[in-house]
Length: 200
Image (cartoon, rainbow, N blue to C red; front, side):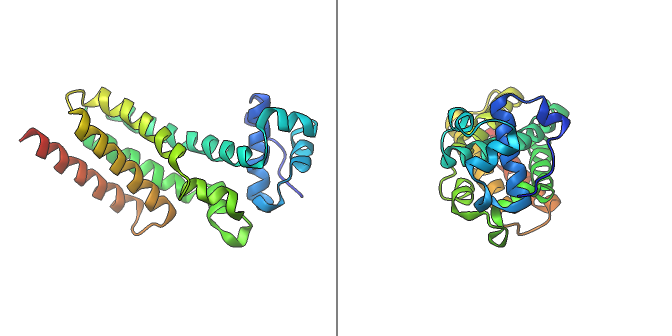
C-alpha cells in the first residue's frame, strides 16, 4: 500500500486523530478494502495493539473516519451562519451550498461512494442505511445555529424543518440532481416558505 505521507495538520492531531487520518488517506489511495489494522499501524507509526486500543475494530474505524470527515462539512455550516447571523434563509442557502460544493471536492467521499475504488460495504452504509449517527450529529449542529438565528421558532416545526434539510442535503450529496447553486436555492426556498407559513 503506497499512501501519501502525513500532512503537517495530521502531525498536530491526537494519536487517535492521526490513526483516523492515516486510514482516510489509505482509503483514498488504495480503497477501504485494502485497509488492515496492521497496515494502518505501519502508516500511523504505532503498534497494531495501539490501533485497537485507540479505535477498536474495523467497524469502529469506519465510523471514526465518517465522523471525522463530517466535521469538515460542519465547519462549512458554521462559516455560513457566521456570514449571515441574522438571516436564516440566506444562512441555510450558504450552508447548503458550502456543503454541496465541498462534497464535489472531497476525495474521501468519492472513495466511499465509488464501488470501483473498493470502498466496500463498511463505509457506504454509514452515509445511507446506517446514517443515524451522522444525521443526528448534523442536526444538533444545525439546530444550534437555527436557534441562535431565529430563536422564536416553535420546537415541533423546528424539528421537522431541521430533519428535512439535513436529510435532503445528504441525499443530494449521495446522488446530486442539480448544481450546488440550484439545490441550495431550492432548499432555501423551502425554508423561506416554511417561515412564512408559521408566521402567518
